[in-house]
Amino acid sequence: MVSQRTQEKYAELALKTGVNLQQGQALMINAPIEGAEFTRIVARKAYEMGAKDVHINWVDDELTRLKFEHAPDEVIASFPDWKVKLHDSFAEDGAAVLNIRATNPDLLEGIDPTRVAKANKVAAEAMKNYRKYTMNDRIAWSIISIPTGDWAQKIFPNKSREEAVESLWEAIVKIVRVDQEDPIAAWDAHNERLRTAREKLNQKNYKKLIFTAPGTNLEMELPEGHIWKGGSAQTEGGVTFNPNMPTEEVFSLPHKYAVHGTVASTKPLNYGGSLIDGFSLTFKEGKVVDFQAEEGEAVLEQILNIDEGSKRLGEVALVPHESPVSQSGLIFYNTLFDENASCHIALGKAYPTNLKGGSSMNEQELDQHGVNDSLAHVDFMIGSEHLNIDGVLQDGTTEPVFRNGTWAWK
Ligand code: ZN
Ligand code: ZN
Figure 1: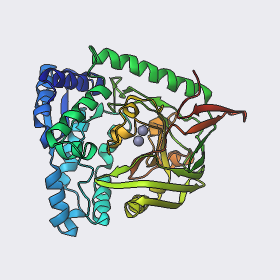
Figure 2: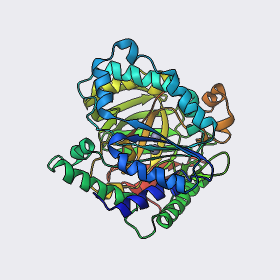
Figure 3: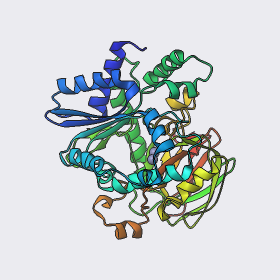
Figure 4: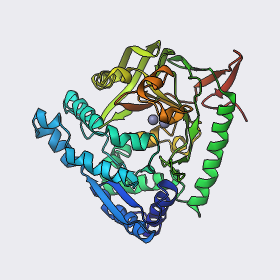
């Protein structure tokens, strides 16, 4: 185990820099039951910081799998109303939400992918209102991770369970800068670097990005009024928070009707416990018209068939290949980490906050501006040391943005 002191530093970072918990605010935590010890540290610190209530939703991988194995279809195809009400009531109360994500990447191996897709879809539909709070930054929310045994052993297959957990703790602590003397100050400096990158991109206001790499030749238009974001965000009430820890990305949205060409994945995608690997997608007028995968093609097909929007893109994110996640040399089989190792794009819903005035537009207006909508939002990695990106300015001039996986500007 990492020391108690390190876990306390991490808990403090999650509460202060992550959700920026306010005096008198409630906190809802989604946490793996295996991480009870760390979660209790977070809860204790939250109360010490003045939280009025800390509510924890325990996630148990084994029980999740048992349900998929045994529950009848009609149960899999429904989502309990009380769960919706629980989340809505905390969101309406302006609570902060901390998600501690540590799922076993192979959890649902062998489970019928149509049942998994169905369950994910009904959950997304049921939680639509709650998602508006998080995706529009109405409340402060943050995603962090801690090691669990199955997940750690997936990353370190040759180590004992205990050693694997220890190694994963070490990796995470380093990547989230908790190994530094003052992690909160380190994050302030990091957020400042991300701010500089996103402001430069906003000033450039590229009309189009062109991605080239082995297996990739993709042209992506960016909508008029698109905004690059990254690092810390602000709630409508003006509270600064960090949605993802780690985060190394600056991101915006592709025009949902103007993406052309083929893009190849560079890392495996773990979709709710199922792995998809070595895949590529071909787009025409923003829509996937062809796809293939070396592994998990049926799962990829399920994602694309969730709805109309899951065949289109909702995010483009730039991450230099020398990010700390990439430097760890590990594949985490967990999007929170892997997406911060390299450039990525996402199938499905776009963040309306990535468009000027987007968060107050209705569905039709968002569509007219090229902002994608879907029940899905699935990130996958397309970056590597071979990736080049060109930016096309409004006057048609083309210039390098990324060369060999990193910023062309220095
Ligand atoms: Zn992203
Ligand atoms: Zn994303």
